[in-house]
Image (cartoon, rainbow, N blue to C red; front, side, top):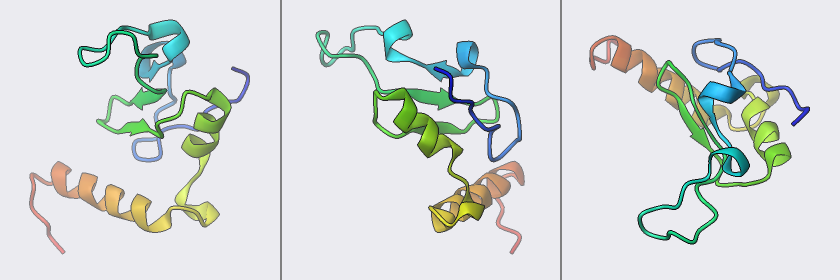
Length: 97
């Protein structure tokens, strides 16, 4: 786990690997639906409410996806829509535009 995670793209907070990340090799718990499964894939739950998972169990692949930003030309439309949705929720559910 030597790849560094960029801060949260919405609130700018540095991600705490011990607190904000679910890592199957560390945090695995049997699921209700499949107690013999490998647990859930790697995910991040930021304090701002952002939940992020790519469905992968590969840490390097996960870090690459997390560190991808709208300004690098990938996933631009999705990131813009998510950011706008967060703004609307913070405004009390009212779209002012």
